[in-house]
Length: 152
Image (cartoon, rainbow, N blue to C red; front, side, top):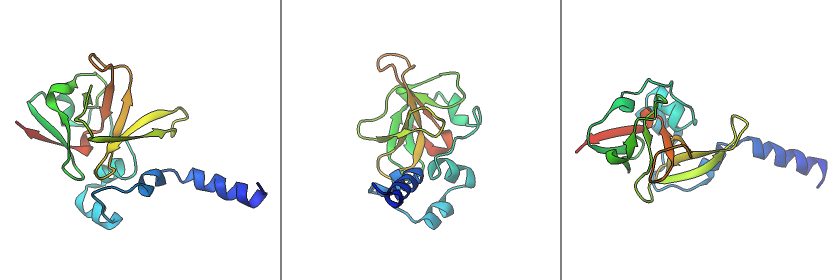
C-alpha cells in the first residue's frame, strides 16, 4: 500500500455516517425532504445520529397501551408491553417488533456501542445495551423525537 492509497483509505474511514447512506432503504428522501418534514431537533437525531437531552421526551413517562412508530416512515417499532422505566431519561424497551430495526457499530465516544436505526428508512433511533430486564436482558435506549406513539 502506497502513501496515497493509505491516506485515501483513512479519509474514507473517517466519513462514517456514510454507513447508513451506503445502505439501500425502502423509504428514501433527499436531505431537503427530510429537513422539510422534521423539526431541527428531530433532524439532528434521526439524520445526524444525535441524542436528545435526557428527560426531555414526554414519551419517557408514557405508560399508555399502544405502539411506537418510526417518525421517519411510520414503521411499527415497539409494542408498549415491552417498554419499561429504565430511569435513564429516555424511552426504553426490552424488545422490538421482529424485522423492525437495523444495527451498526458506533465508535463516536471511543468505545464500541450498538446503534439502532429503523430498518425501513434508516433513521437513527438510539442504542442497545445489555443491562435490561428479562426476558431479553436488553435495554433499547431510544430518542423520543424519533418516535410517534399511537394509542391502542
